[in-house]
Length: 487
Image 1 (cartoon, helix red, strand yellow):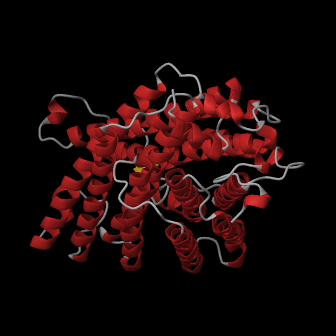
Image 2 (image 1 turned 120 degrees about the vertical axis):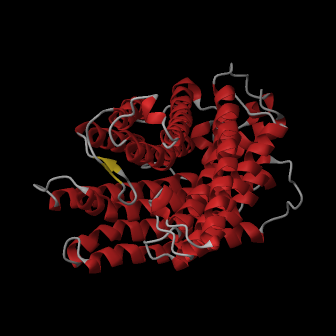
């Protein structure tokens, strides 16, 4: 049963009284999100085993398994995980706008089923003796019809709750959460337009590394706007939970909306520049300069309202406070990338780790309490946060250090050319930090998975006094403040 503070959290977020249908759907998206991290972890373990000397004589590994397994690890820990959390946020935003019985409610459950179908379509090709893995940017790929089908099914599955959100906005005065989630939806649809446009331009070409690099370059850059928007929403959510009041409402809506405007305009780069030219490639890359100001604005807005020093045993405080330096370091490393050495993965590992840390906070502090399955505060929960944040920070610093000495990215073993002691120290730090982060990730999946599979408790009686959901936008705060209460 949620304690009074957690019950107040649900009221603040507009996530109380979801109703049986939306609760089942939220449980589905939460399970898929945790499942994606579990699959990523399993493939990380298999990757480590596949590199052990002599292991090929013990187990008949599929052809090219190392690179295929790396593709699955990246896609499930980055793309599937992020999109499942996005779908869950869209669900809560829909409820905040329209209550427990929204229009087209069935679209959300259909999305859950679609994602559940897409996941095996994505990872099964790694276990088959066919198809070639291409370690292209943003959405690494296995050239196999099953894999491409899985990507399409996943895209459609996540689109369904976004359509439902848009369908429930007319006729209501949406609060901040609904507005920000709708802006995220626009960015997501813009990314799909980018992928579809590139696909049309590539019609008739044989799939290859170059094909996949061109296919996912533009849309992949646009998708980073969605990821950044979700990070900003997460920061505001966690800050509001810690402080018990609205934080950065107007700034948050403006920042997330600004990113949506840039994202929606981005597919026009396919018209402005020759297809897949160096100029177009650089233009998509330069979009990243719009991300920093929005993130900085929200970070400053959160800091301006911060009155919660020293709450190191508060999980929401830890998730938020530790994600900020990880994101800052990862973002700063982005100023030095050249695409050839490990400074590039140092940049995106730091940024992705920060987003993942915030998403873990949303799962344990919002999604599970909304399902009546709150995660109790414990040493294990606190250590999971510390280990994951600290390990990821060490890992990305190690990658950056190795990259300054020319260590190439996407290489293993002797191909890493670790000829300088600085490169050796960097990769050792990366490996040690990565191991610590994996332990933190395993603890998260165990903690959240155990809570998700537990019997739901009754909502705290404090929630009985909450206004009916359809009118909550007139009186709630934090993520879904009514117009009179915006700050």
